[in-house]
Amino acid sequence: MRERIERIHARLRTAYGSSAAGAHTPVQAVSRDLVDTLVMTILSQNTTDRNSERAFRRLRERFPTWEAVMEAPPGEVVRAIEVGGLAPTKGPRIQSILRQIKE
Image (cartoon, rainbow, N blue to C red; front, side):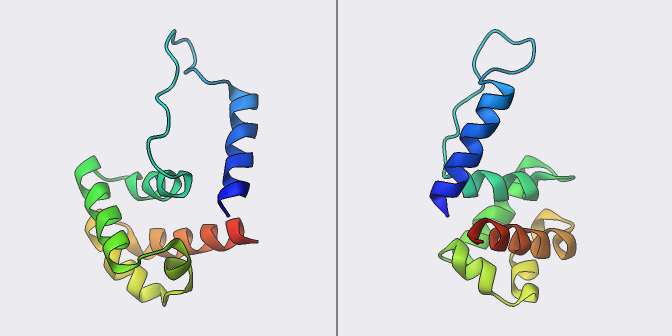
């Protein structure tokens, strides 16, 4: 899974470059695993940074691996991330994306 994400990341950097549009400094390097970053991005939609970080932390405490998140009953994922808002939408979306990455 990680290799595929790294290939996608490389393709995005090739297509869009490594600096923000109009900026003179490079985009901050991803400081965490690429799947972590992807899930964090989904959790950050329409909520505060604080709530999305709490949702991410609860998700990772409840499920030790992304494989476990992917295979969990959807309701358990929703309950784990509900503090972040829009959990009934974000939970199944995260699981679907994880399945697509695995394929």
